[in-house]
Length: 290
Image (cartoon, rainbow, N blue to C red; front, side):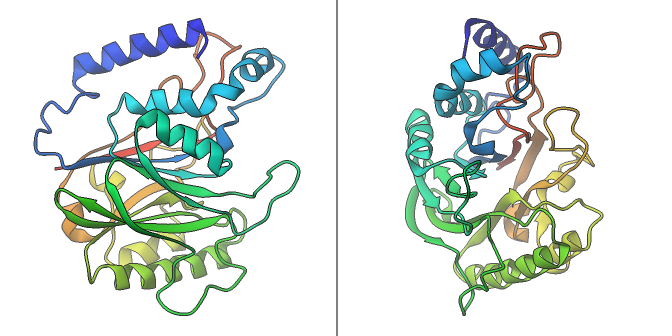
């Protein structure tokens, strides 16, 4: 972060500590906190004439800047959508002092997005196993999960936890419906050996048919359960759509204690400074369990 951004970030952190939002005060029995974040490949957003100088001057440090911003919320798990190369994810994980599982994108990418849209699960817990494009049986059709789908089995103080991270197709509703059905089948299988946490950029709103697939499968939208309502998660500039989610199986949902969309700088630009930018074009989604 440059001097101005760092000063504001420290001021924000002090304010949040004063309200108890950063610390685990009142959550003494919390086994974990988790964050889902579409990080736009650590590029920063938006890139305009006003932000260009500051953004380009700091872009090489974006993995560490993002880690520093999220560390203030003491996460135990962070899932990344629209990730960068594995080398940058490794730097991000190292800055948090965490382990990671990396999931290459299903699309090879182009000059604008080399490597496509990978994902990652970053955690302080031991990763027992991880798998790219996991299924409940046969391999996925190539039209599915062209962004990413990955899972990791974590060894936590409260038992085994299955984490599924995904990024759904942005344009095609029919593809998203197939992706949702495939994940429901996967979660049904994973539930035999532990609780399941599903996080990601699902590219649909709560009033969409895809949302009903999750509800009918018995999954719980932690954001809705904890009262965030229709608070949007994208874009980070004048957000208007809630498309980023944290879902869980019911026994884990019963332990939910808190959820919020992280909508303050540096996740958004400084309101009074047009030369600043957000870390991504999405806002992070956080949930805490006790």
